[in-house]
Length: 295
Image (cartoon, rainbow, N blue to C red; front, top):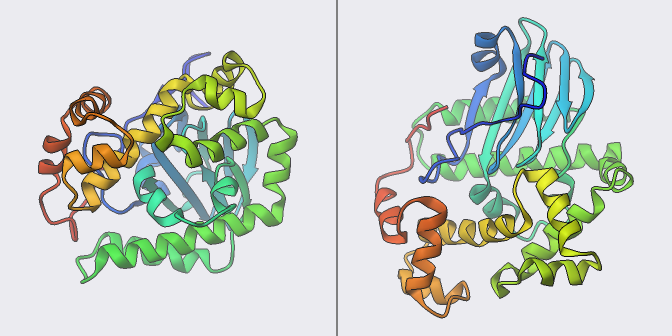
C-alpha cells in the first residue's frame, strides 16, 4: 500500500466538518478505490465509523498495523480513530457505509455491549442478510422517499447489529482483550458514563487504576490525540447532537451538560468546532430529508 514510512493521513470526510452530516453516507467500493489504483493509503477518521461490505472480490485490509486478507462475502469494521488502509483486487464489488459519531450515538443508545464490539477494527464473514440491507441503504441514500432519515436510521441500526453479531461470533472482543485493547474499552465505557460529570484525565486514570500518563499514551496510540482531547470531544459531540436534534435553548443545553456558565460553554464549543453554538444551529436550519452529503 503506497504511503511514505511513518506517514498517517487524517482524512476529512463528510462527517468531519462543522456541519452534522446526512444520516449516513453510502458509496460503492469502486467509486473511491478505482481512482487510486484500488489502493487506499493508511489513514484514520477521528469521528467516523465505517462498515465495508465486500460482496465479490478480494484484497488486503491493514487495521492498526495488522494485515488481514479478505474475499467474497466479508465485512470490515472500522471504528472511529482506527488506522486503516485497503488494497482491493480490481473490480471488487461492495459498499462502504459511513456514519458520524453523533448518528452512532443515537443508534447505539442503550445498546449495551454492542458499542464495545463495534469498537474493534476487524475483518469477519458477512451475515447473509447484510447484502440486502446495504443495498437498501444505497437505494434510500440516493433517493428522495418520504421518511428517508427514519428508514436510513433503521437500516443502519440493523447493519450495525448484524456486524456486532458477526464480530461476537468470531470472538473479536476476546481477541481485543488479549491484544491489550481492554483498557481502551474500559476507558470508553467509563467516558460514556462520566463525561457529563466533567471528569479530567486524572479522574479516569484513578478509576482505571493506571497513571494519567499511561492513559494518555494508550488513547493517543488509538486515536491520534491525548486523553484530554478525547474527553473534551465526547462532551462537544453531545452538544452537537442536542443542538441538532432538540429545540432546547443554548443556555439550557449548557446547564444540562454540566457547565455553570453558558458563556464558558460557548467558548469551549467554538474552540472545538470553529463556530458558536447558535451559528452551528443556524447552519442546520434547512431540510435534511433528501439532502445529500459530500463524499
